[in-house]
Amino acid sequence: MKQTFYKYQGTGNDFVMIDNRLLTFDKKHTNRIALLCNRRFGIGADGLILLENHDTADFKMVYFNADGNESSMCGNGGRCIVAFARFLGIIENTTNFEAIDGLHHAKLEKNVVKLQMQNVAHLENHDTHVFLNTGSPHHVQMEANLPQLQIKEIGSKIRYGAPYNKEGSNVNFVSKVSENEFSVRTYERGVEDETLSCGTGVTAVALAMNFMGETEKNHIILNTEGGTLEVSFNKEEQGYNDIWLIGPANQVYKGEI
Image (tube, rainbow, N blue to C red):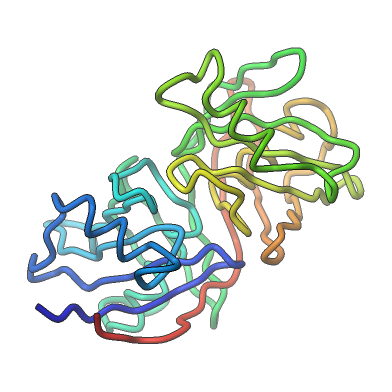
């Protein structure tokens, strides 16, 4: 059986995108999803995303990690599926869609997608890091020598170590550039390697840097290996709200497999 797919990327975070409104794709075939994401034997991607119909929202987003398992929210994937929905003619310049962590609102301006993330009420401050959930769990720690850091080696130890263990956490390493600008490198669970960018990760970093007192700004520039993203938010006594992840989302190609 032939499967039409589209390849999208948002600051180097790349996804196999499939229009599954007719529910023809087998979501239970974990090995097949992993094969499609495999960079040697398949299409190659950090994850696979299905666009499906929804009763009240414009569409539904179903996200799978590169290991073939359905996963928690993916911020860059959310931005890419918004661009995909516009390409398919489902939406124009604004949308509401459902993801695994609930409803999201988004706006499009040319190839820039502004995605509203869920509110974050709880951040854990530890001696070496901050932990929070921005739709996916994130460990955030500062590093002085970010370019030379062995991300896969160090990230995997943290991802599988206590207290994360089997469920695991994404791991973000951060260095400060200026009052409102930070550089980020991320180890993603499910991919089990460094990715060029992580949307929920840079969102977590922006909030964590404000929480730690590294910045008083509420509009942060995040430099990733794959490009630049922005995060804006409102700070409250109990956490953060009105959080927006902002950056480009582009279709790379269409194919059949």
